[in-house]
Image (cartoon, rainbow, N blue to C red; front, top):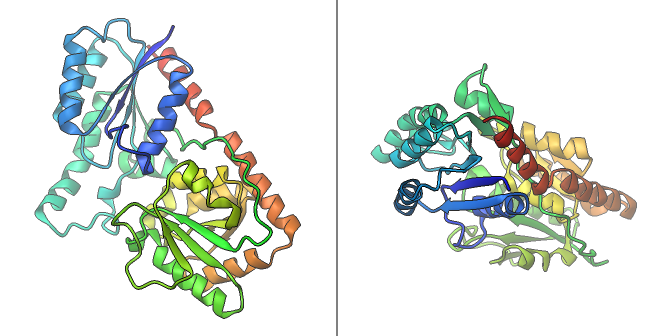
Amino acid sequence: MTRLLLVSMYPLDAGLWGPTARITRLRDALARLVDLEVIDGYRARRRTRLWRYALAGRLRGLNGIYVESSTFLPAESDVAFLGLSRALGLPVVTYIRDAYQLFPEYYPRDTLKRRLGAAAFLPAVHAMRAASSRLAFPTAGLAEAVLGPDADALLLPPGAPPPVDVPRSPTANRILYVGDARLPVNGAGRLIAAVEIARTAGVDLGLDIVSRPGHDPGPPHPDWVRVHRAEGEAIHALLPEVIATAIPRPRNRYNDLALPIKLFDYLSYGRPLLVTDGAEQARVVTDSDAGLVTRDDPAALADGIVRLATAAPEQIARWSGNASAAARAASWEDRARRIVNILTSSR
């Protein structure tokens, strides 16, 4: 049986949130296809496990290594371990999930540590590139931003969980937002303002925000905003009252080339999506006809909210069905199969 190693630069045993949810789903899909071994964790834990793995001779008989990078810079042990693996003839694919350090709106350079982190990002990526067979990115735009216009990069967009079948209540009147609600670059404040405008126009809608502790919108917020601690099936429990999901990120250089993980989670919920016009996320929603794309200002978002709230039931059903179909077409299983094919055909 094909034997692969997954290296995750995040711990996979600390709950499902953002990247850990994505990597956990990919891990599970890979494990159904191959004999999968996993090394995960932040730097200190990962460093120890990588060298134990190498010294125990576990690289022998391995068919390939797939690496999930993190927002943090790689450790010297990551580069050395992958370099050793390449020297032994093993194919290595490293996935670069983001490049916040290149974009001051996401990564303010307001401390010495952050300035050093921003300066070290591209050299660290090039070191990983030298230690890997190929680098992979979620979009062509991100690959070009990191590697330049002639980048020889693999494209591996995020996968989607299997669609859930949660009927909508006839009285559903909530919009769902999942993620960090504090940061202006995520747009939760714009969404709250937009719902307020829509409510003033006579639309009876509320907002459900699912966030981690410390990531809530700052107080005070209106009583029609409900904040939840939920993940996985606990989010599914909110869906009967949800009429649509929202990604209100402001349009900027990074949001034009990024694909939010939660976009694909939202597709699996089988609800229409309301997203701002960042190029990549707008393309997914438009191509799948799974909802509405608006400009990023609160007034435009409010217009979209009113259109959703007043849409005919047949239109809501069509958007919802298309969202579920798009989730099936972008499954984690398909992505896992592609990774296995890349690794096993490149040795």
